[in-house]
Image 1 (cartoon, rainbow, N blue to C red):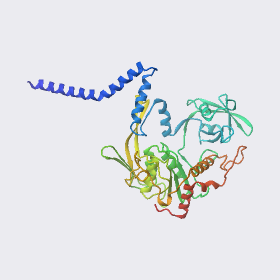
Image 2 (cartoon, rainbow, N blue to C red):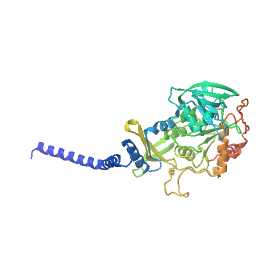
Image 3 (cartoon, rainbow, N blue to C red):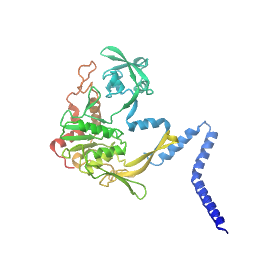
Image 4 (cartoon, helix red, strand yellow):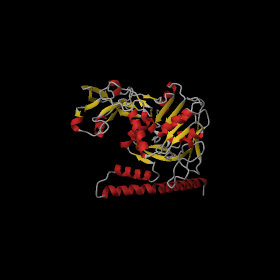
Length: 437
């Protein structure tokens, strides 16, 4: 047999092996396609190929864990907008029944179209693009749909202010939404971050870790007056972007590890993020971090890191226990995506955060408060904290607007402060200098 013939046979053999391997890999895909074909052509009710494909993708992802998911085209824009911190709209916050007798603007986001046009807290919405609010008696979801629309369009809004009807033409734009709130919202839509009951303590409530969270935090700390303590409230923060959490931690550390990610191959370490020189807050300024059972993912990264690095003490309740890193993989030409768990993260101590399905309360998971920060809460305590936050976020009720006919000042001196037990405990610790992590 000649050398050339041998080379040809070898190449043919390799090609056959590749074809076999490819066929073996494609066999499950072929079975899925075959099933979709039969369903589409024989099922008693018509089903489209796209709907069947979406259902198959959704089923595959949901079979992995509670956090992996299929993001169809219809949901991808809103999903991206959440973490981009940009929404198409007017930039207003509205309350209606039962909180208010009629749909009322309670806040306008600073520099939003509504703010620039002149809408103000206390304005009662009467009509939207000719749709009469009272006559139609819409629920708040209906009113929200009336206010929404494509970017570049204009909403014609008739409002009542001090007994006078006024019309505003408000452009719909991409509105930058804050991810960090403060102690109380001011009439211009910005937040006061100094606690009213303790003006030498800064209070930051991070609601989500998005694209702009680190920049927001940097701006707040750079412009703040010198303080004797900082409270970072991560209660009900379900997470967000890991990079944003790392950036936040880096602002309070000079060096050392922040978080490590481990993949599936024997739990091998993939990467470790380290702090860089430079801190926005002097090491002498103590930090308290508030968490609860809904604090998850990126918020657990921040709480665990700053606790492990002895930079902060943690108060409240044990956190949720979601320690997985998820990758967003575009599919269908970028019109849809899959959210896939690809790794787990670990804080500097190496303690496991992710709660496994069979873990009990005695097992190692989540972030635990420090001994001096453990606060037991009843449902009534949680409701009181939420009620206080709602009041503080409304300038018509928090005492910062006094000359409006719809003013309902309920607690101008923040006497409800003591009802928020974790927050009150944090102030007590900072005032007493009981800050040893």
